[in-house]
Image (cartoon, rainbow, N blue to C red; front, side, top):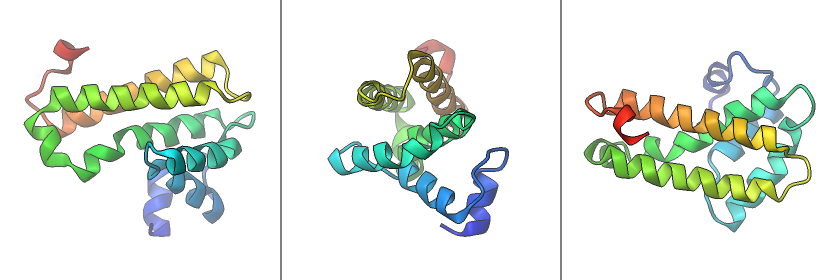
Length: 136
């Protein structure tokens, strides 16, 4: 990832150093497999420290919409099924994060809400004729 693009992507967060940008990128691009969940677990620890929760919300929100970037046409063709698949993916991640000792119920509820909102906003941008209110 180009450093300038990464800095712009994380504008408004405390993610500034190249190492933090690399960690955030690893989380965002992680898959829902054993390797990807390990990457998320390992790299998320940095962003769960006191005062860094907003960074974690931001990173995980970008993670939630990552599949849209890779399959835009599929989401345009069937946005409702795509949304359901993304929400299910988010729920599985939340189940995984519940096992951590450093994630509170408040954190998990907030991150779920933020990821869902980011999914809805992104799908509304990609599929302007799709009414998100009907599927919520």
